[in-house]
Length: 317
Length: 245
Ligand SMILES: Cc1cc2nc3c(=O)[nH]c(=O)nc-3n(C[C@H](O)[C@H](O)[C@H](O)COP(=O)(O)OP(=O)(O)OC[C@H]3O[C@@H](n4cnc5c(N)ncnc54)[C@H](O)[C@@H]3O)c2cc1C
Image (spheres, rainbow over the protein chains, first blue to last red):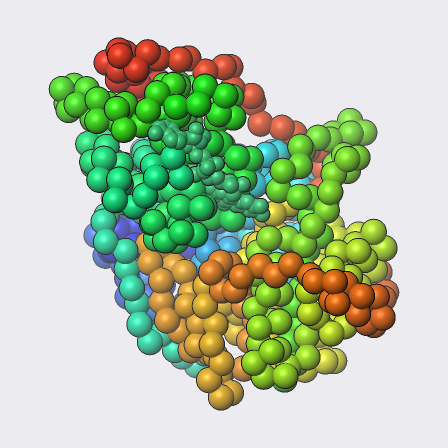
């Protein structure tokens, strides 16, 4: 038996959530085949997956996979699963990963679960714990089909090294066609910390009054090596780009540290940040609901507190 | 042109989430149900396209009779007719299978829905449906413009966005800022009452999963307040207590 993991790279680096997926799979089966598709990967980076438990890494670097055609990539993954007699696919929940998971599930008549928060319980059946209601609850789901597709949530496992670097092999998937999506332009965001992957996030809201005041937010983020984020009204008013908006209708983050500045803590905002490990809230209103969800709080004017915090962090570095 | 919009019927975003019957059931008492916020974007886009091109818009939900007010609201916003597939929605594959069985006979030019529902957050129905119907599926889509027999869309990818072109028919999982949420007006509410709402049988689908117990996350132990005059204390706590810097 073996288990297949679909691996994504960003900027030639294997994504942290893909490493988590490899590690997760290694806790289910000893034979972990990591599969990477398209031209966005770096071969030596893929070899590093051995450290997290991969026993084989297969790469088909054909650029037909770069257009994000779900069905095409799914066919390649299904083919590997069939030839290797793998019954389980593990991957990270992401816009592309979830769509791919769906297509593989149809192709292989598999059970499917996304946003899986923990390792499965196999004492009776194959039960996974899914995060639901945008982080406000969990549900156990028994995956009853023989084939299973599991898309894990960030931090579903704490990865530790359990192997060493391995050689990767190339393969050429026998899939028809070139895909049905034409990519005309790609626009990558400047800055090297991806918000969904970030371990530290500095986020600010309408309390900052206007886009001209984001200098201190960016400086705090840079001192902490954090990604920047914002509340929905802030991106609605175009103070900040849409892709920084976190919450129920935006990006869901689960960093080690989330600092919220001038954000009231509306339930829709909390839904996107409630799986952060440590939450710091800076707000001038002691009644702001965010304080109820915080680990540490400072009641004060952001325009005074944030510069002081930057100084204190610099002094500490 | 024929557009299908699939909507979920979900608890309002401010709902308190509780469970009953030994954590086997979601407690709907006092909960207000709405069109899923992402689905609401999809619906708004479909209504914009209807105004632009004269397309007909069908709105669909898999659910029991209690979801009909939500479908009526979608009709009031501008959909032409509604379809309710009568079944308890139990998992994404079951829902997608039911939609696929219906859509097979209808030859829609595009199928729009939200990128995910905000109750079970599967985020997979568009992908499942695409594979079942052998139609290209794209998500999350932030802009959509028709161009003859194809559509140009902005797709969000991790770390950026792409401009893509896809021929019709296609499926799109929508998110902001694809269109602005619409509020039904009086005329819309009046006409919605007489628009057709068909009910289709949704029994007899093979199940792929078996849902069990619900649980709630651990609650926070309470906030530690730090004096703004003593900010060094926060740095100290982050470093030595929380160990996150
Ligand atoms: C269906 C739906 C979906 C939604 N999805 C999201 C979502 O995904 N994400 C999201 O964020 N919101 C979402 N919202 C909106 C949400 O309800 C709130 O309106 C929003 O989060 C408020 O943003 P805010 O905290 O920045 O602004 P406000 O609520 O206006 O809060 C500003 C805060 O700043 C504080 N403040 C002001 N001046 C200062 C100062 N000088 N120093 C320190 N603090 C100061 C104030 O005390 C206040 O607490 C959604 C709403 C709906 C209906």
